[in-house]
Length: 242
Ligand SMILES: C[S@@+](CC[C@H](N)C(=O)[O-])C[C@H]1O[C@@H](n2cnc3c(N)ncnc32)[C@H](O)[C@@H]1O
Image (tube, rainbow, N blue to C red; front, side):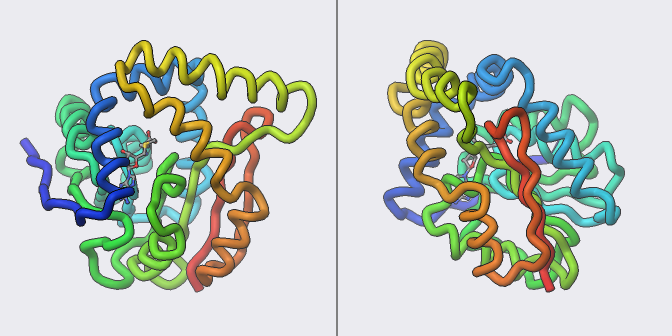
């Protein structure tokens, strides 16, 4: 049985807040994810894997892997190794249990570490993925530069992130759901008072669509592409390291 390779994250305030928030909701995270999205989050991860695995990546890094759903989905493409990193030990613990249950512990290795200080040498991975993680980085530039550093030349970055729909009536309906219903259900099920209010706040404050493409370009990635999913409530961004 694989053990999570644990190392203490740096003591920055924002990071500690995020880490303790995910530690506190980890036991309900998967249930709430599937319940609040009516299971659509599974289809989004499948779509990301389909879009990102065309170049047959052998060494994949899943940043902010959480409970490892994306890493597990990538395992279906038969890469040599998938490494998942996250700052929350409780999220990783649940991920590790799922990996062990599925007999994937020879392919997927989890490690507790910080996306902004990746413990890997330059050019180690063919593909780096991040699902619903970049929004939580303390310093987005630093995170993207780290991802670029560990990618081999021509390696790809694939990011899945929530976006806000832009058109009537989905925009208005979703805003109501996201700001009123979702925090209420999230608080009730997870018993965490802040986590599911943080979600809509952090999504709205984060660069979306063209603004995130601009961040990827600024970090030095080439050929950025965006795929809008399900009325624009999530998007996949792909780009290549030169
Ligand atoms: C919304 S969850 C997404 C988990 C998973 N990728 C998924 O698709 O369900 C966000 C994850 O990002 C992690 N995270 C936030 N900031 C991080 C950082 N700086 N380095 C590593 N992980 C981080 C959190 O601990 C949490 O597990």
